[in-house]
Figure 1 (tube, one colour):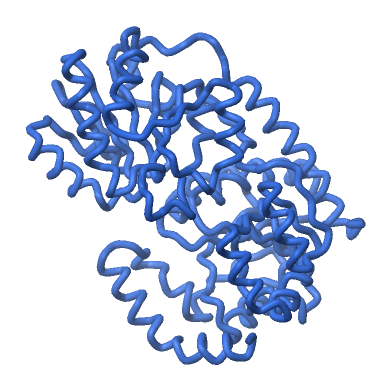
Figure 2 (cartoon, rainbow, N blue to C red):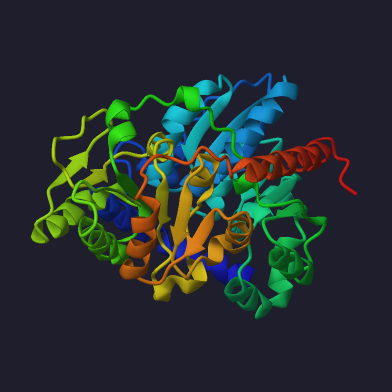
Length: 427
C-alpha cells in the first residue's frame, strides 16, 4: 500500500503545478511563496547551525494558534533551540507573519507536498532534531522518511475521526507501519486515544485539547473602532461558511424587528468571500461595509464584513454574543465546527448549530459552564439574541474563568510530556 501511495504521488507531481497555478489565480495561494510547496530550491532554508531545530507542522489557523503558547513555554527553558513552523493554508501564513514577530528564533514555511524527493530534501536541508505533527496531519512519506532518518516524531492534539479510523482499519498492516513510528501521541479527545491504540500507536496519552490553552492579553488589542464598539448594540457571526451567510443575514432582519440600531459583524472563514456576502446583503436592502484592517466603521452601517485575518479577538473583547460557524451545515457533520475558545476567553455568550464534531468535547465543557448554547435556525438564534441584546452591555461576570484554569492545567501537562519527549524520557 505504501508503494502504491508513493507511485501515485509521484505520477501526480506534474499536475500539482497546474493545481497550484489555478489556486494562485483564485487567490487561494501566495503568488510569492507557493513554490515552497513543490520546488526544493524554494525551501528558503535559514537556520542557525549552532542551534537544534524543532519542527512543528500545523496545517491551518486553528492548529497554528494552538501551538503558540507551547512554543512560548518551551522558549523559556530551551535556550539552544530554534523553531520551524510549517502550515498549509494562505490564511495561516498571513497570521504567522504577524504572530511570529514575537520570537527571534522561529521561522515559518509552507510544508512541501508529501512526495519522497521533496520530503528527503526538506529533511536534509532543515535537519530537525524532533518533529511535532499537530491534529490529524498523517503524511506517510514524511513519517516514514523521518523514521528512516531516526528523527523522533510526536503527534500532538491528535484527532482521529471514526471515518478516518475506519479508512485506516481497511489497511491494518499499512496503518501499523505508519503509526508505530510516533514516539508520543497526545490526544485531543478520548475517542482518538482509543483509535490510536487500535492502530498500534505507542505512548498514547490524553491530557486535554490544547486549543483550550489561551494566553490572550487584552492590552495588546488596538481596535480603531473601540469607542464605537462600546456604544453599539451588535453581535458577531464568526468563522462563517458560505452556506451560513444567509442565516446570519436573516437573523439580522429578525433582530431589526426589535432593535432598529442593531449591527451585525460577519467574519467569514475565508475572507475572499467578502464581496459575495456584500452583494447578498445588499440584495436584502441592508447597508453593508467591507471592513479592511484599520478601517473606521461608516455611519449607519447595518452589516460589517471583516476582511482581514487575526483581528477577531479585537471584536470579541467588546461583544456580548457570538455565533460560531461551520455548525449549521449538515453535509459537513463529520468535519464540523470552528474553534470557540477565543470568544469564550473573552467572556462572550456563544451560540452554535447542531454540527460541531471537531470541537465536540470543547462545546460540552462550554455548555457545562453555561457559556454556549445550541441553535437550529435563524429564528431560534434571533430569539436568543433579542434577549441577550436587551441590555447590550457586556456581562461583568467572568464565566470564562473556569476555562482559563482548565487551559493552564492542560498547558502544564502538555509541556511536561513534550519535555520528556525532548529528553528521550518517554515511558
